[in-house]
Length: 300
Image 1 (spheres, rainbow, N blue to C red):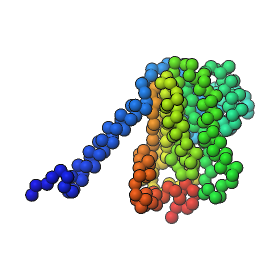
Image 2: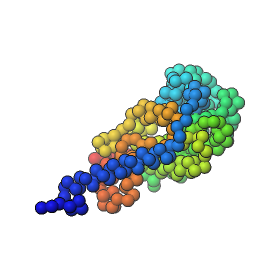
Image 3: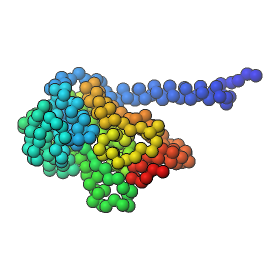
């Protein structure tokens, strides 16, 4: 019996899946190259990097990795850095081992503008901005106060606008610049961080090619922010080591190329959830258990 290419058999099914996978992989590579732009060679030690929320967690790891390579790192945060080699005092600018700390609430436009002027006067123009600052309220929506919701939006979203408005005008005068946005795929926390995707899309259109644009979307990290989040299914949604995520960010910056980057694997395909049948989506969310864990409910 002759079997045609379009006959439904196990062999043809595997063939269709393979072709689809290869097609999407090829399109993904083309898409990444198109979004990344041309790779730029930069003098690494001449750059000034500003890391918001850089005193601890992922931001602290990124700051340390950058500093040990001889680059000047400016940390904006409301808490003192936890680095053993960086001593800080409230409201003062102190430099130890290439790390400079400014006490600053990125949700405050006035504070960001004031600090931006101080950085420009004392250190120079920021060429790489890493918008990492973020806070998490681990409660269901109706249990959150209006003040908590507003604070999350102010820090996680408007904080990006405040720093972009403060640093971009001077950055555009440089031969090279890089805007790095740290987003998340974690439940209600992602409601504010999800807006960063469309903000990133706007930056791709508005900013010149001389400024690279990078967006990182991470799942759960092994950082203090997510220390109380119980991971129900480590096979589907493994926890990413903070240092692994930090190394990925630093490597992309060193490569001088922008783009969109997701970790772990499941984050790359979360967009498919919007087009799959509702029953499949519901089953997948139940199986992963991520929604329940992110809301702070006990995982059975």
